[in-house]
Image (cartoon, rainbow, N blue to C red; front, top):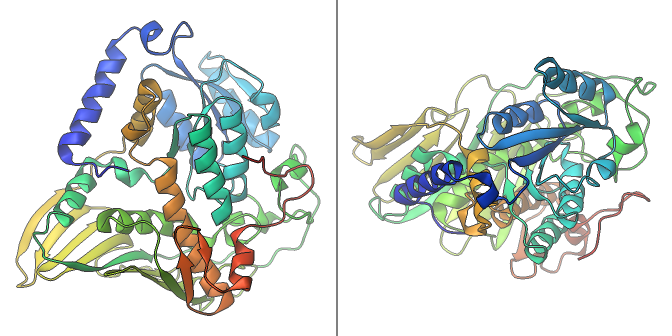
Length: 423
């Protein structure tokens, strides 16, 4: 994956603009506009639908969700605008439509790779939300499938498409702060408790077996459903993979590193006393040859850490670079302020569409393999926390060294009928 400088970023945007000016028969053939299907249309899915809908030369033509109530609500929005849309309760039926060019995936984590893999095999390009995968082996499978089928797969770490963050990374890697010896990824916020809820009957209109997919068969429970599924290992990755992946991705990007040599992580519930399985407090350290990447998470703090709720600090010999929601700032070791810039707009879906048109993986700001590396760090930290020890990692083989228990977490059992495809 290339490092995207300001010049390259602007050049990429100009290429996109040029592509929009060319008749679509010359860009995509006789089919005209790029036709997008969205799978998982609640929460983040709604935002992505809006992004694609507002992109010139793109049409959202199909929606898919296991909850018919959510699906009907989103379909109605299109029909109220007199726009044609197909609605599906089963992704397998949707993928039979050969006219679809792109599938956008914003489902629970455990569905990311199964849906993305099926879409790639069906001949579609894919935009898949973070974290890329639910296990390390899933992520590698999707990378290999994308390469085999020559498909464009973008990961939803949209910070890579902020022009100002590209400026910050260019500065970090310029050497102007001397040696960068550590980066910290910060996730500090207040997430309320979810309480304790008994199991119940599946609500009408919900295809619960489809929603569960590869996950173990369990009774329906509202605390394991819309959004709250993030806090259960069967479906999510905790806030490490939910919000933390963004900051871990920026840290890894700025440092110019891929997979670490070792990881340590501790975590637990200092705040929650409810149905949560995943931690509300977590600290991880990823060890590279000559730099450390740290992650600190507190889900009980309605105040910032080093100026950030969600952000990053890069520590160099001559000062720091801070990157967060408000933008980026250099602070020299004598306290004087250096270069800075506000956070720019999100052009991530536009970048993806540009790459779909060009058919060049190198045009992507967050290619599937970059997504795999960042998701792998999240999984490594969660595994180290769950095993309770420092884990050494063979980056070439993507396996833990001499730790049978840790390696059992590299994959998982898939429920019959929802197995992953093979390469």
